[in-house]
Amino acid sequence: MVRSASGSRSLALPRSRRRAAFAIALFGLAALAGPTCVLGAQALPAGFTYETLVDGPLASATAMAFAPDGRLFLTERETGNIRVFENGQLRAAPWATVAVTNHGSWSEAGLLGIAVDPDFLNNHYLYVFHTINNENVIARLQEVAGQGANYTVLTPPGAISAIPYHNSGPLVFGWDGTLYAQTGDSFSTTAPQDLQSWNGKVLRFEVPNLTVPANNPFPGNPVYSLGHRNGFGLSIHPVTGELFQTENGGALMDEVNRIVPGGNYGWPQVEGQEITPDPSLVDPLAWYQPTTALTGGAFYDGQNYPAQYQYNWFFTDYNFNHLRAMTLDSTGQNVLGDTLFHDQPGAGYGVAMGPDGNLWYLTNDGGGYGADEIGRYVHSNEPMPSVHMMSTSQRAIGGSVTIGVHAHNGDLAIAWLSWSRFSSPVPTPIGNQWVPIDAVLPPLLVTADDRAYLGISVPNNPSVSNQAMFVQAAAFTPATGLVAPTNPGKTILH
Image (cartoon, rainbow, N blue to C red):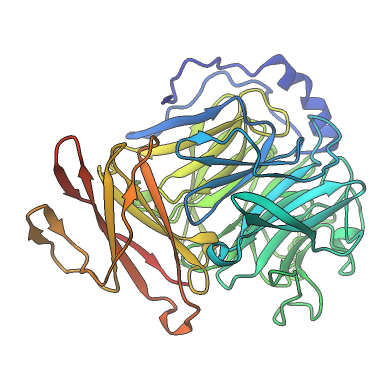
């Protein structure tokens, strides 16, 4: 089903959402400082459509991560289920279930974060952040025969305190294959500034066993940055490789932060804009007042959207379900613009860059801490057929890349790779060829989602670091006998 911004859903938030505003303001996500219902939804920019992919059977989803074969893994906070969306539908049975302590539908405890290992094609590892009893843990699972198995807790006992709120949980991999984890302050007034505490921090680990990287800013310590309250979004900049974060403030301001190694972001002494600058603290890139409860985010790094959105950071909020697009300069250190991209009824939880070249979205019509809907933003400029390529979990070298083809259901697609691209198109009997053929990939059958994906392992060869890899495909339609080439795709290997 496709739903545009002017779809038929009610434009007012359900009563249950309004009743929960007080509880959220007191205990969890940033305080509601504005109206608690949306009077009207803002239309999407010209050419964009929002597609609803799942609406209903998903329960309290808080995070998502793509595998190299195009599957989307999702966390259900309350149930502890790890769900899989593939071939255009949500698989009925969970991929795995982990034990959780969730404290009910309006808490922030439970299964909170997920990340797919960049080398998933070979080691089949996936990592989760979840609450059990009085602690948060980071655990590893391994796929065996299509299901999650070999559950292993990797964090020391009691290392990350847990209460019903301020647990955080986002996980994301960096270019170098290290794993970043965001933890909440667990309502402690001292933990965020205490280097011996893992709460109120961004942590950084080597995988698969969560050892401390030798180049962490505090030797022998997993703490990468400190002074955080409750962050819900971690993203890697596609050009600089730096880490970005959304941070929920108290009653004053929410923050967008560029995370620097060893940086102190000031909580609980400072939130948002400093009145008197302190050189020992890192200022936010942007702040929002009144607070809107910023949640997940992702950088756009594809070819389907107009050029103005390339490398924009898209992030959402819980209070009003606003999806914002932030433009940064080439260094990622200065904000050039910040616009409201879409305004829907309900609450927003997460955004992810998809292997099909589009942004994917987690939302819920009625609030509660967790999504029941998966959506996707597509643009009319996307050619048909088309191809897209991206690194799995931000790391290609020593990891993998995903080839995504968008064509008609039932088409057979053949893709090929090259280290170069023709300066001008080469006419062929099936259309223009842009990419020389260095390697032909196995054929792909396009499914009911009009998409097909192929994961490819990339050897751990540093000599190709920062080199471009190109891909093109041809789609064969059996019903007509026609063959059509796609656009050229490109990714930079890190």
